[in-house]
Image (cartoon, rainbow, N blue to C red):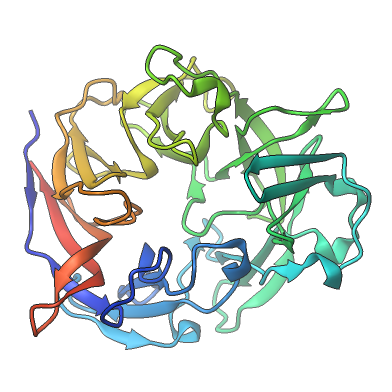
Amino acid sequence: MPQITLGEPVLIDQAPFGLTEWGPWQFPHLERLADGRIHLEFHVEADSVNAYGLPTRHALSADGGRSWEAVEGRDARGGLLLPNGDRLLPVQFQSRHRAEVTLPEPVLVQEDAPNHITHIYRAADFPAELSGWRFLRQRSGEKDWVEETASVRMPGEIRIVREEMYAFWPSFHHGRSQLAPDGSIWEAIHTKRIVDGVVQPANNIVYLRSVDAGYSWDVLSEILYQPDREADPHADQRDGFTEPEFNFMPDGSVLCLLRTHDLLGVGPSYWSRSLDGGQSWNVPRVFDDRGVWPRMLTLENGITLASYGRPGLFVRATADPAGLAWEPRVVVVEPVERRQDTCSYSALLALDERTALLAYSDFNYPDAQGQKRKSIMVRTVTAS
């Protein structure tokens, strides 16, 4: 039975006193740079499509997360290290107002919530410069990063305009791409597609796979939204499955965690499992009663960790090679009133065979004067 021990919190950065809006000093991401340092990136703008592609803040640690130095973004590019030695980093273009681009006719206009209108388009109707799917690539042995457009073959692919902004979505998620055991690259996204001339009613999970170092991608499989109506009274009105996180498990299976939390409120997280290399997935089952932006990793000692929350933030552990039996969750940030505790987005990075670094936000961490401020934090998670 694995035991989780949390290290002491380490403060990275704090928002100005009195800033309580949703979005700034939230959504952390961790990665390891080529020189071994740890890079932490976090959001400082509103949580809005208007903020996509705007500058973020960055910090580096050379001592395993014990101390940090603020740096410019251009000095902190890690990306996914590929078998050929290249590094690949998704590019999030800045959103553009719909009046600034020439748009085709939408195939569907829907009201997601009061004053939240989404226009859905066929991706095939868009010019190449609005296609998205951009990367920065640092070729093996070189210093410069070169921007490129990947070829993504997704039948029924869509584009959307939300809040009057075109956001080059869907796109690759920063920090979500992973190398499979066979050396291919996997990415999981949530999206709707046009199937038999009709836009799918809910978000589903689409797995994309590249076998040529990220230059081209094809659909590997799909997890359709199949909710548990007994566990969620709002199941039929949900946006669907979103924010997929997957992990290659010690037994050779692939485990995927899924969010359903949306504007209807707290929704359960789900898990789905593949036994055939991602070709097919079992019917999703409830993992917990909550869970946005779930993250997972397996340490060298064979223990798999998961972090998720909202409300609150938690970590869980399993020594089960298949990830079917998990220990009770451990509190990182106590849940309080809605949007008053943490954004519940987190990041995990392995430090050694039994320890990971966890990055997260805490909206009530005191400054030197004892005043509570939105803060970006890290702490170790030891599993033994």
